[in-house]
Image (cartoon, helix red, strand yellow):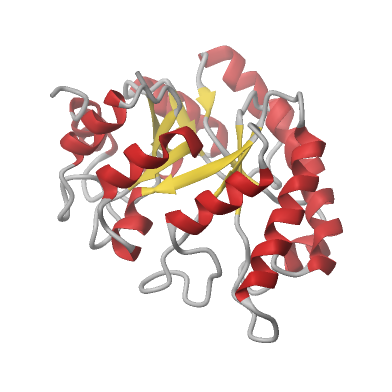
Length: 263
């Protein structure tokens, strides 16, 4: 059975209090992707105190100059970003170890107009192979995320599950997998359940949110009870994280989301 991970943004309080609030509302795990501005020792103390799990972190650096070139407008589609990318991965891996977090989310950056998609695809594979060597044996995995370009991330390079799967296959490391975000992929390509089933061996982490609006399941067009049942039937035992907003109280959204496991 997979583990549901709450969105830390649903809960009141500072970063550290959100672990306690998520636990109080019935979750075993919570996700807060940002880490570079927190006290990692304090966060670890709360994790140890509560027994909560941190399900994923976003690759990042405490150096603003590195972060400036890592994200959407410039990323690992550029070879001159690969060294800064690896420095950020080293820092994020240290944070992941401190927070006992098994997943690091990586994005590709925006599509370039000066070279072919083939070149950009190859650059991504090269960067991830280097990162795979860095994290090998650490117990932490990279999860590569496709995003939608129709609503939220115009210009982003990696959109389809098919290309993400090709990249994962070419990297050929058990430590590099796909972050499958149901919200993004419903917008980009639909066919969510069959796509998850076909690629479950490559999927290391799952995000969920309803369409349209990116709020909690039940606010849009997706049948999440069926989606969760299908995920469970694949034998997936990782995290399913609510990477979405909510339209009701933290207590209500927590009850409603945990109830989706009853099918």
